[in-house]
Image (cartoon, rainbow, N blue to C red; front, side):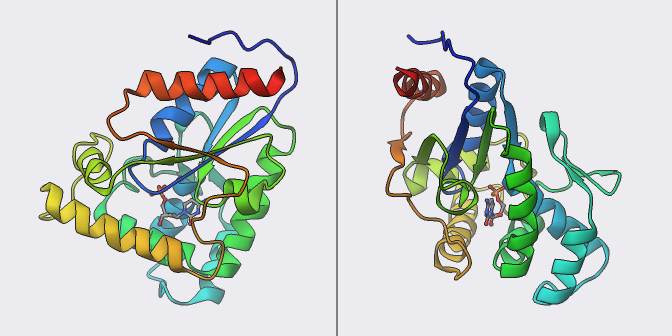
Length: 228
Ligand code: DC
């Protein structure tokens, strides 16, 4: 068991991986243990998708979405998700936003805007940032890069039973969740703009059947080892 991380050096910890791999739970717990800031970048793409739907924008209109992203004020600190004063923490966890966020995240100019904001948030270190491109694009210089994965069946099961995620119409059965997840994985990994990919220097952890505490301990060990 490794829970003592004794150094003042404030690191950048990047956690990437597909949906349902356990990034959220693990990143939050790790940030708590280290007294670091936790940033869920997926929530930023979701917030932009929510706002775009709210404003009835065409989700394929890159220019309109990029303008919206550059004007929107997004706050994802301390587990909150607020966009232009609207608390959307719950509203962004629906099947509609799952699909809309994947569409928004395909747009290179939207990514450009959000990536700049993410870099600014992590510039001082002391951050655990989770997403799809954190170790590859946002912070290629991150001291610690983790790629969390799990079997498609386990990821679908976790997503289907996640209390934070309101199951949309008919999506309450694992099979429906599994096919929606597979479609999002396909979209996230095949898009041209910073697709989900394993950084060469990332540590890949398969969390299938692994208790959360064990995953967190593995990560704390990596942090301690890094600090020597
Ligand atoms: O992690 P999530 O399911 O909340 O992410 C929502 C969408 O945003 C998903 O389609 C992946 C995408 N995303 C991304 O492209 N890059 C990130 N850094 C984070 C999320």
